Image (tube, rainbow, N blue to C red; front, top):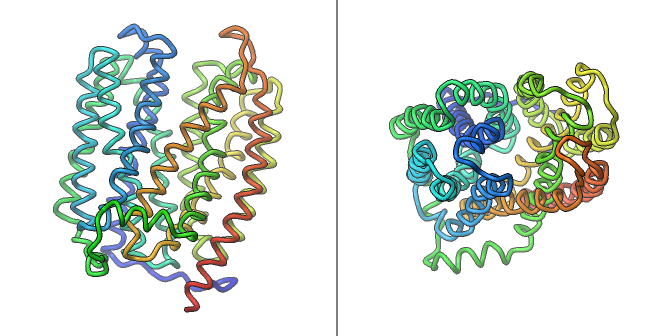
Length: 412
């Protein structure tokens, strides 16, 4: 399978271009989602949204993205992956444009649903492209660079979102994403080569049967379960992280952009570093170390009392180090589970379950956390931390099983 340490295979100029295209594509998709958080207060006041309505606006994207993964899984392996990426990315741009033109609650919900239907599939298509273009020994680095979109969206998304929203209105933040994404779509159209190697492997079967065959395979279901566990563990803490920082740790509102920016910059360093280590060493061991680190930091962070701001910043970086470092090796390993002919369907299903699991995690977290008044500390956040630890222990076992499956697969 993998040696304890191995030579890192070099990347060609075209492979580096593919990494750049997929990374900036992911950046715009994640930015579109992340930018909702900093503009929440501005958006709610400008079109008179209640907190529950804003929650619907946010969750509409996640659940429509999950639905789109299921709808596209059956035929995801029947088309050139470049054309599929360009089609859904164009739909994502149109949905984001509708967000920028929305002036009411109903229009915004519809726009977010449209954006989620198209944007929710882009990540799975990108992963399928990565698996087609790069060897398993290269994927750790590739995943690290592509997943830098999360950190870049924090570094740029929150400060830029607040600046644009304060000065020109929240709609213009979405319009700015449309302009950037349109330039990337042109790059995809003219620079990305067709990816059709999987087409000759397809059997003549209906999309529904292809979907069922993908779901029915035990090895694939193990990959789906591992992704769902990792998503629940990541999303449970996220919705209330800002509320916890402000009300429990006494972080000031004007310090939040600084906190997110520093965390984002640190992730830009962490992701490619872990990606390189994942290619050089055993991915399973890198994942296990990262999860153990994350579990320790989760317990520490969710049981804190008010501390100086610089302490919060340091602990956020250390927590983020564990959360992000487990994703690169696990994603690279899970990408090796499906056969080439099933890769698109597997990635679409995987992306769908990731979105749905995240939505369920956020909902469950909302049932656990209690806040007596809008300015009082939230209670039971530590309970969420302990649940994340339990799920993380299970995920170590799941990734070990997947590692063994891949090893046996490669031996045949």
